[in-house]
Image (cartoon, rainbow, N blue to C red; front, top):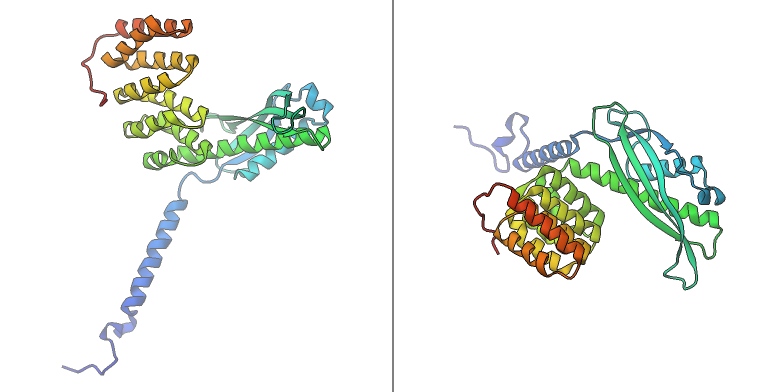
Length: 312
C-alpha cells in the first residue's frame, strides 16, 4: 500500500473539495434553495388602473383645490409605497378610490384649532373577473389647519388616509398567503393593522388551533382588532370561546355586550345559556336584555347537542 506523505489529504484526490469547503458549499446550496422557496408563490400584485368613484370629490375638497386627478395621483403614490406594481402583470387589479366623509374637526392638540379630516376607501377589483376576490380597505386621517394653507391640510389628510388604506390592502394580501402558524404569530405583533389582518385571515380559514390566540385578542388595546376577534370566534364556533366571551362582555359597554350575546346564542351550551338568561332578566340596558332574550330563543329553537366542556 502506498503511503501518503504528511500534510496530504486523500479526500482531495480527483479534485474533490476539502471537507470544510464541501460543507460550505452545501450550506450555500441549502440557503439558495431556501431563498428560492421563500420567493415562490403568487408573485407581485399589479394595479393596472386607478379611477375615482363617482361623487368622491365633495364640495369641501373642491373648495380646497383637490380634484379627481389629485385623488388618483395620491392613490397611485400610496399603492406604490405599499408595494403594489403600477403596471400590467399576471395578478392584475383595478383600483377605485372613494372619499367617504369630509369634515372640519376640532384639533385635540391645539385648543381652539381645527383639522381637516377625511375617510378614504380604496377598492381593488380583479382586472379579469373570476380570477380573484376584490379587496377593500378604509382609513380615516386628519391634518391640522394651523400654520398651513387649507389645500395643504386636505392634501396631507388625503395622503395619510390613502397610505394607510393601501398598506392595509398589502397586509391583507400578505396574510392570505401565510400559513396558520404565521398568522397566529402575527396576532402578537405590535402593529394593530397586522393583528387585524391576521384575525381576518384566521376567521376565513376557520382554524381551531387559533382559538387560544384569538381569545387573547378579546383584550386587544385596539378596539377594531378586539371587535374583529369576536367575529372570528363566532366564525370558528368553538365552545372554548364561551367563557372568554362572557368575561369580555362584562368589561364592555352595552353595545358590545349585546353583540356578544348574539354570538353566545350561536355558540350555545349551558354556560352561554345561563349567562344569557342573567342578561335577559337583569341587565340595565333594554337593548342588551332584548338581544339576550332573542339569543336564548334562537338557542332553544336549535336541536340539542351534547354539552362540551369549555375549560373554565
